[in-house]
Image 1 (tube, rainbow over the protein chains, first blue to last red):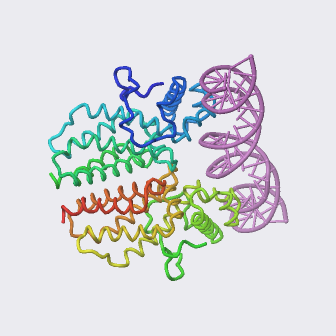
Image 2 (cartoon, each protein chain N blue to C red):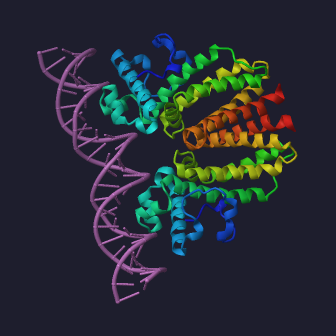
Image 3 (cartoon, rainbow over the protein chains, first blue to last red):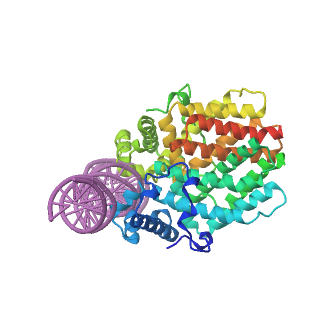
Length: 221
Length: 221
DNA sequence: CGATGCGGTAGAACACGTTCTAGTGTTGGT
DNA sequence: ACCAACACTAGAACGTGTTCTACCGCATCG
């Protein structure tokens, strides 16, 4: 299974979608450039299997034995590509986030004030996740895991938020903008974790984000 | 073992430290009032065992079989009191946070502006955690777990932050104050999770909190 | 007193992430 | 052609959270 509709690019996605230059920091041990086509194929099948199982049943449904079966690969082979379940899911998250960001950035945000525009962008991102709630929760959960392998996924997501916000807040002072985006990143992360862990609804996530955008951006605008 | 020095009240702590009225919402299934002294004792021994093992070796050192041995209790008995390891740790977190909040609130915060005072309070809380890093990380990790049982712990922590901040920001508009504290809660939570998962240093946590306090509070001051 | 039920105990059993063992191609150097 | 290295595979094995089974002691009710 491919990643869910709303997030898949309309055309077949070229492998160069995410070239080396956008990932200065390693997120897992293997350098994709040195892999044989066979290995790349296996790796992608594994990520696709994670998407499929996660979309159907959430985090606990992504069981390594099932991933192996779904991807037609031996269990141990997963661990040759990803150091853990969470790193596999984090890799999936990276792939997803990159596409989501591209889609969101593409369209100009609605809204009159910077705060409104920022809210619009975040809402659209939330809406996309809401369409695949189990999958989203699974990926977020992996990102918030203590697993070292998931670090890269987290920083990739952070970069996406910053790149989504920079255009909107371009009129603000450089330092203030950085600070606001950092704080927004925390609110985003924290709210989504609460949601992924079943402690709050999606409306709640949106409310928290709105609140944060207003209280952060309005006084500077 | 009792909770760590810095967080333990100076005098023997009465059991009424945290009476029923401060916990309007249940955090685990058992109503403490209906327990026999025997049961209360076992429950407390379990929490103490979690403190001890967590302080020594962090989250993974809090192994249920060891908790059972340390508390002199059968493995299955733990699960009669707490629905999971994470709920046990969340209960420990609640106990800890309550005492920490009492200590922090007691002393007037240093600093000239509200932002500085808020930073001081948060720094003091951070410093206390830094003195027991493994234990803190273990408790935070439990709070951020998907386990339903940990919900109560989370809301108890949230309440503590709000009560620490309310005095300081009392001159601000009611709604703005609520919003600021909510956002600060997210920053706190998100930063601590990153730290507990080994993704950032303690200095980083402090920096993020400072940044947030300034960018949030200064324009309203 | 006997029955019943509840909470406790010891220990086996189970689930799932992860690691290990052994064996089987396949590839590249000599 | 042969050997070494390496990625893969099937499957067993291991660790730790959680659950299950069987049993026991004790209080409360009739």
